[in-house]
Each structure stands twice: as C-alpha cells, then as structure tokens.
Length: 423
Image (cartoon, rainbow, N blue to C red; front, side, top):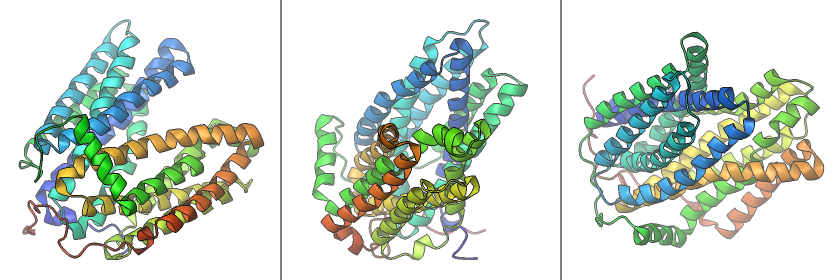
C-alpha cells in the first residue's frame, strides 16, 4: 500500500507543514460552511435566486484582484506575517456575518459587503500560503504535500456544507458564521507558531510594476505557461456543471436528488483520487502526467455527454474529478519547483486567478453550447474540444511533454524544519 495511498511523509517529517495543513483544514471547513450559510440567508431574506447569484458575482472582482496583488505582497514581505494579517481580517468579517445573523431583523447589505471583503482577503491569503509551502517542504516531497492539501480541500467541500446544514436545521444560522470565526481564530494561533518566512531576493515593493514583473516572467517560461493553458483548456471546454440542472431534469428524468448527485460526483471522484496518490512522488515526467490527466478528463466528460444512464454518468464524472486532482497536484508541483522563491507569490497569484476564473468561463461556454445544440451536445462537444485543445498545446509547447522533475533538493527553498523528527 506504500505507493497507493497518499504519502504521509511530509506530515511525519515537517512540523511546520503540519501546522500549515491544520490551519488549512480548519479554515477550509469554516469557509465552505459559510458559503452555504450566506446563500441560505440571502434566499430566506429575499426569496430570489438572482440575489444569491449576485452575491457570488460581487466576489469575483475582489478575488481576482486579491490573488494578483496578494501574490506581489507575498513576494515583498514576511509571508508568515501576511498570513496572520489576512486571517485576522477574515475572522473579523465572519464575526460581522455572525452578528448580523443574530439580529432580530438581519440586513442584506452585509452579505454583499462582507462576502466581497472575504473574497478579496482570501485572494491574498491563498497565494501567500502556496508560496510559503516550498519554503517548508523540499522539492522532492512537494507532490505528496500537494496531494495531502487536496485531500483536506476535498474533505472540506463535503463536510463543510453538510455541517452547515446540520447547524442551520438544529441550532441556528448564526452558529455557522460563529463556527467560521472560531476556525479562523484557531488558524491564526497555529500560524503564529510558524517561523518567519521571508522570501530570498524580495524587493520590498508590492505594486503594479511587481505584478508586471511576475507576468513577464510567466510569459518567458513556455513550459510553465503551458500548464496554465492546459488548465484553462480543461475548464473552459470541459466544465459541464452549468448544464447539470437540464441534464438532471430532461436527460435523466430526475429532480433535486439527481441534480445533487451530479454536483457531488466530481467531488467524490476528486477526494478518492487524492487519497490514492501515494505514487505521485515517484513520477519523473510530471509534464506527461499533467497531459495524461487532462486527456482522461476530456475523454470522461465527452463520454458523459453521450450516455443516458445515470449511474454510468456518475462514474464518468467521478473519473473526471480524480483526473482533475492528479492534474492539479502535478501542475502545482511544476510551479513550486521551477519558480524562484522571490516570485512564488506572484506566480501563485496568477495560478489561482486561472483556477478561479476558468470554471466561470466554462459555465458561460457550456450555456452557449447548450443553447445551440442542447445540454448533451454542450457536454460531449466540450469534452472533445478539450482533447483537441490539449493536442494543440502539446504540439505548440513540446517542452511540457519533455519536462522532468528537478533533481533531489533543487528548488526546495531553505528547507525550514526539514529534519525528520523522532516519533
């Protein structure tokens, strides 16, 4: 089982990674619960799905701005200090949501304002956290590290909403937001025990010129840029979630329960894929692993669009979700092992902007395709377009196929807390 189940070596060897992962688990659980809480409260107050959608929409701008500016800030200062600042602001925002929900007549505007503030500071926090990781864990263990982080994230997607539903139904909505505030406060305490994480080569300046420098570096790295393009290709053409309601009702002849299964299937597959990642650390050709994973994603989505049997469709969505996790692990590993330490924050910011924006563009593409040829056409044509696009990227950037893992210890940062610990 050594190379089947997820490799726990980074957890055993690196105390500071255990701290980061514990903080990620706590904050992600609270964040996913809050997503449900905000949507539930907005709908109960207004009875409008449009309002719920608008609250999600107002988060996009701050989130994208936060990832780009946050990456630049993370390259200009102690990343531990920046993590403490962002977690503190996020805690205050969650307290605001909890206080508003506790009022006899809650207001609607805090849901918009505080959700936007949360999205913006989460945008700063995420690239900072990603940039801190290779300063703590050596390059050889980064694939296993990223797989463990994926497990934590996928578990939060499942457990957070479930916990929110239980709390709303048994205790009250405000407790969902108080839970988020508590998990963030605990995350702040855990983060405070990290050592200083000052990037080597930092400029001390975080402005537009710093962001442009990061984008210029990315433009000059064809192989690295290709990993971004591969993800955009998969998400824009192969993300079918916008047509799930139509598929549930018209193709599978189901209702809300069927729709829930369609939404849950990729997440279940992703969680399963992340758990069985013990083999990722021995993969030498990481670029080829990315290509193969995206190929499986595209083929599974295309096949999903052609079947009319629900259980077969759910299996195919699960396969796609597992392939997406494998792609994410290796794309993240390539990023963190090839980018200089003083640029990690900015490149992590652009990476998160791509990961965040791609699915939203995919929703739009699927909607347009469905209006032309129906929901199934939107799915299978998108899957095929993903495969064709992948071939074009590999043809234009053959370096991605030839990419290999750096040598032992290369690109590992300072390796803080790298010595194995007793026990």
